Length: 153
Image 1 (tube, helix red, strand yellow):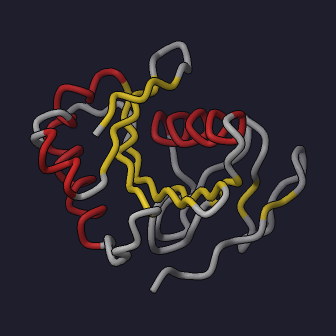
Image 2 (cartoon, helix red, strand yellow; image 1 turned 45 degrees about the vertical axis):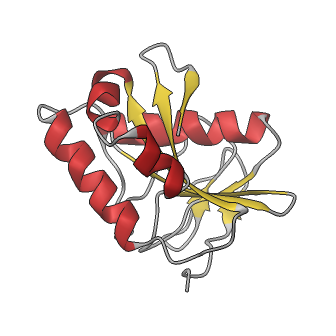
């Protein structure tokens, strides 16, 4: 069962420790343990959240579950993200493991996402398309110029 979603602070206001700011690319990001994300992972999550919001999704960040939870209509998307690192293959493998452990919903309207910078897309694509399709996992690339590209299942 998913953890309760965090409330969003108004854009431009510093969030309280139990509140994650939403709606502003400059907001602080929290990791799965409630710590502030650092570096490129925060950028990847911020850009992806802003893109989802521009596509009509309601976006929230969750504690102890996934980096991003988004809803639109009756659809849900749960996403795990990684930023640029010195070991993209290892870090993407870790991301898949985190996501797989948390896939508890059999509802066909629930999808899961791997969100990675351009540097890590090859590593994300190592999981065969048929496996990703069966597990309802999409890959999203966040480019160096902060563009989001849906690569597909």
